[in-house]
Image (cartoon, rainbow, N blue to C red; front, side, top):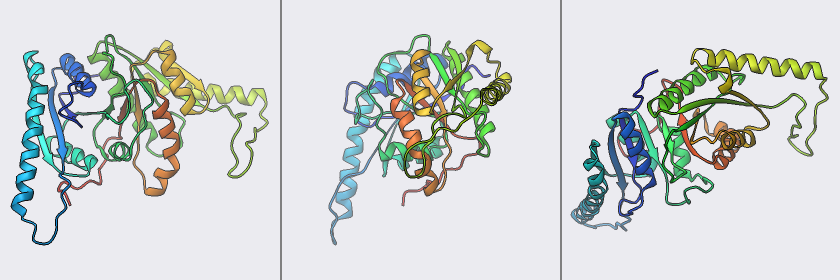
Length: 318
């Protein structure tokens, strides 16, 4: 695994005028360890009421003035980082909606990592994802780090959440990519990597489409075989990544409950998870579980796409 997984980091600055920037602190900490170049990125679009005959020159003048103010604010944020020896560049775009502006910059500059957060939620509290956040998760083609905590990382603890028994096509390739990025990330930051798989025992209560839940009747021997199959699948998936058995963990229960509990027990600083973009109906079906899991995780979250993922965001604004 490479000790420098991230050489270019795109840092999404939502409010350049704010002095406290947890997202920037996190990105700078990663860059300090990896030598990565930081790009501070801010997008904006003036809310103007344009009527027939409204001068286009006025719109351009307003846009240029707003971008100039944003760039000046970014310069102030970049100055102390440059004094620490970090390589920092600035980018301001007149573009919307925000998630498309970010993805377009990703397609232009090809960073290895996007770091994002939001003032709309308190750091250290529950992560309530907005529509912009979900669209970014679905469409960002490179690893995406959502910053939930304001505290600095020291010896970072990374938890990779994989699903070696998932019947979904391409799941094993995504698991390998999660392990590769999580391993490189923890190695580069001098940390520790644990791997977690959450599964449901066969006797777990399952919800009906309508009505009360029911619990299947399963004998102990069948349940033990199911557990053994799960353990073998986890060991097989983690073998190539060199994860020792002591750092492989099987949790029982629904992922939205088991993964946050495991993250707390392991004192994880960041959880690495996979995401696959599907059609509109598929997103609705898988969205609630993913949303609850991300909401309840007590730490930062690094979202990884499969190799070869293609975003649907166009390179040019509409």
